[in-house]
Amino acid sequence: MTTPYALITGASSGIGLEMARQLASRKHNLILVARNEQALCDLAEELHLAHGVNVEVYSFDLSKPGSAKALLNTIGEGGLERIDLFVNNAGFGIHDSFNNISLEKTQAMMQLNMNTLCELTHGMVPIMKRAGRGQIINVASVAAFQPCPNFAVYAATKAFVLSLSEALNLELQGTGVSVTALCPGATKTNFHEVAGSSNALAMKLMDSAAKVARIALKASAAGKSVVVTGLTNKPIPWASRLLPRSVVGKTAGFLFRR
Image (cartoon, helix red, strand yellow):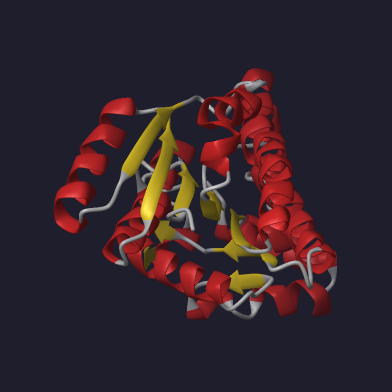
């Protein structure tokens, strides 16, 4: 049997990096993808020396149209057949009012958070189905459960990820393949520095990336459809269903106000 690999996008920092470390500690070989090639090479060396695992690295800007197809072609069908865990972690957000964000940045966010994720998943699902096994983790967000003023496009992209993942997990029942939507709340990564949301009220209670990664891997192994991290975030899915949408949206806007 071919030695299994985990493919992780956005693996050079944050949740993706912590997943790589935790999987390597379990002797799981890795295929790591991110823009920062040097950071990937440093991480690959660290994990190989510490755990003796094989680590392949690919530098791609997945916010570019066509990048998903290029990545899949570069890894090749033989390489893809080794993968038993696929983590769609790459993504970014911008914390600002809708009309203050350039159309170029908005399109890049939508491409990375939705299109690339969907294209990569579309490429991996049939391969995993043929093998009769496989786990996919799509990183969404607690922002997926409600409209988020000042995070409008980001929240909308994550709502897409959540809905797609839940639907696919139902479609794939009985195939040996599962899809888990990871919905973290505020997490100690560089995401919020890039997004410009470090000072928002919602950032006061943050989980570590290592904790989020651990919860996600456990939920995926159990075949869960959705996992929300952070005790304070657990009520969010229920609140978004029980409360009027206007109230939910205004509350989110208050928590993410600039």
